[in-house]
Image (cartoon, rainbow, N blue to C red; front, side, top):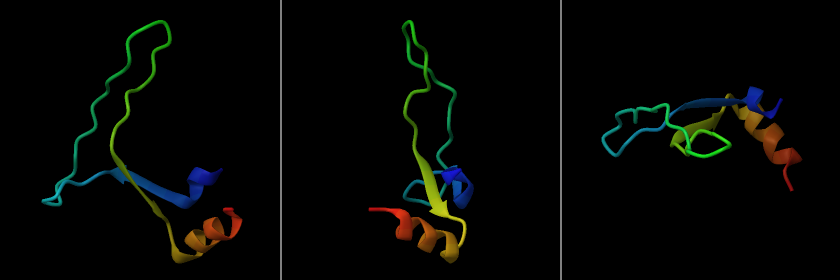
Amino acid sequence: MILSVFNISKAKNEAGDEIPVTAEFSDGFLCRPVPFKCAISPRSPDTARLVRDFSP
């Protein structure tokens, strides 16, 4: 539910170009995505305030 108030997009480099995301996974018995860079921003000022009000 918390993700519904955020925009999640590709991160940008110093030149402002999007950093591509590749589908890479860890090796081993449990396979999971490796960490990647992304940009997370509130969808609106109201949602930013909502998140701030509920955070400790």
